[in-house]
Length: 491
Ligand code: AMP
Ligand code: MG
Image (cartoon, rainbow, N blue to C red; front, side, top):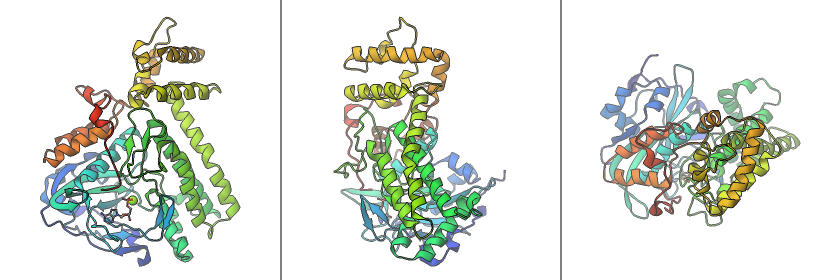
């Protein structure tokens, strides 16, 4: 495979070929203080066939810090609207991100290069168009952590910093992150044309999305409906994956919902430490609209917003039918994943009760979600085994013993072998997740210009299922200071 230099990247800017009502052409605004590279992600460079050595060139930080363009880029800010915390906001759009262009790699995959924190656009409203270093680090690391977990997500190419001051609650410095996805079209991109009653643009958008990203549907007579069914299915699977791994998005507004069913826009997200169904990771979410256990329902709510926008293109009753299928899809996908987490290979009716009882025990004892699931792989199904290490997680070990007896019977019922099961379970129960306090550690070092922890976490989290020598301290429960860090929309 040819490895590219920055200047030889070839662009095919399909979004820029759409009518100008879809976006505003705008270049990144360079920082005052020269941008410098903080971290480059080789795995994402590979997706662009970009030579790793390119990261060392000052031009790399220049291009991805917003002060240089390379030939073929046609920067633009995408237009969209969306429902924020349940309220329709008629116009949002990329207020601080710029689509530099689209690259098609040697395998024919399309990647948007979306530069976040690139300065003001016509959609910036009251914002400054910038991202602070803290939030750029959080997005950079979580994109790759999610990818490592096997959860669909935007990818992160690199992180570039500048000493320019950015004003939030306190004075911070600015940074940019390059986010990659086959498309950054959101539910909100459909909403804006629907609510503006610009149905010809709406149809154009739908045709574009189908042609570029669901080409198998182009010839179908009911292509808009089938497109919707695809989005419903992908969204259901995505959210079921979040639920299984114990992750909350934090700001599930319709403008943060990808049309491709990938995790999009990392703000005040969180992996839960102690198991808590009502976990609210966003400290600005006072009513818990986006609490952990609300996410499947919010997925439905958001999909119903998308369905609404498709009314001019597909019959209402069938859209509704597809929407009605969502809950079944989430439940099925969640159940399949939880069965795998339990190491079960057969599907039995009683598993639902087994899982519910375990979750109720975990909630009662505030058991660390990630640690417990990983350790459950060590469960011994020998009749005399006491599974001491697992018992110790619970305030009422006797109740755990009752559960363990049922689990043992269930395992024996399918002739499960402890050693084989553990291997299977270790592939689905991660040892490492991006706990808030780990991200915080990397942020605090980076604020002192030490970026080593970012690369360390990046390498670790790209392989979260594999025990990595010397990395035990990244797999333990957070210290007390790290349990209640406040993360909000301010970024
Ligand atoms: P988010 O909460 O990041 O999904 O952003 C919601 C909307 O606010 C989007 O239109 C963003 O582009 C815009 N936005 C967020 N932060 C800024 C900022 N610092 N400057 C300009 N626009 C912003
Ligand atoms: Mg957003």
